[in-house]
Image 1 (tube, one colour):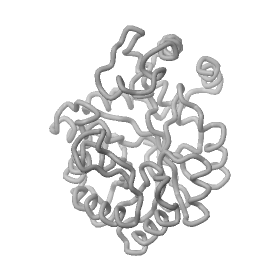
Image 2 (cartoon, helix red, strand yellow):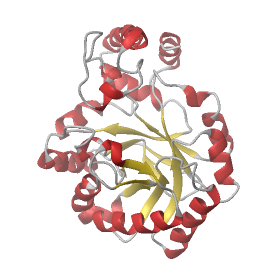
Image 3 (cartoon, helix red, strand yellow):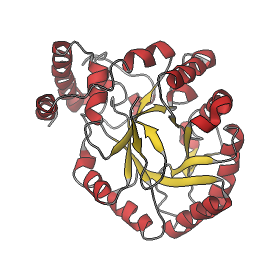
Length: 312
């Protein structure tokens, strides 16, 4: 597994990161059970993945707990990233709120450290921008945690370029985590060029567009999980049907390469050097092994161009 440097730090993280949203299970996903989730974490380590990304809200702490228990024996060999800024008072999606105040962040870090069974977080990220809380308060709280040794470095997630620039005026932000895939290339306009010029790493999540780019869905698919409540176009409606037509072309291209749709879509995200790591969601070890087969083999330039034309 190839590694890339994280921002201006000394950390080298695996190009493929273990995305831990799925193993959290309820309320967003149905997991394959804790035993299979644990085996998938162990398989990730065997395959050379050293970067594990999670968040408190994934399963309301369950994802962090599974990672903490499984990674404890190899803690010094892995890089753990988690997040702050989303809190809840009931275990349901509608009860999740954004809270990036100093008081909340100082409370959340101790809860995450406990669940992850560690004394420090390698990369601590603001999960979603909280427009009600001044950036200065949020960034100052993160710097305070860094000075105390509870976190090594920090980044942001789901920030706009303007929000990222505002944070950089206050603190040293090493990374930004954003969605990036063949169906969502909006960061190419501003965030990717800016990060490349300023040595800020981009961590890409949802490289498979929450499953659409796997090729296993069609125009008649009716989603019953959180995707059924999303904005029309992503998983339903005319835009979704157009995207399925594009995925059908991706299938044909992948087949011509003796590859599969999933791996081809993931490889495409790694073409840009600003992408430090692409987070791949995992349900079980067999799925992980299949998705990473030959992942270090780069797509050639003419194939990248062809994919870019398909997914304009």
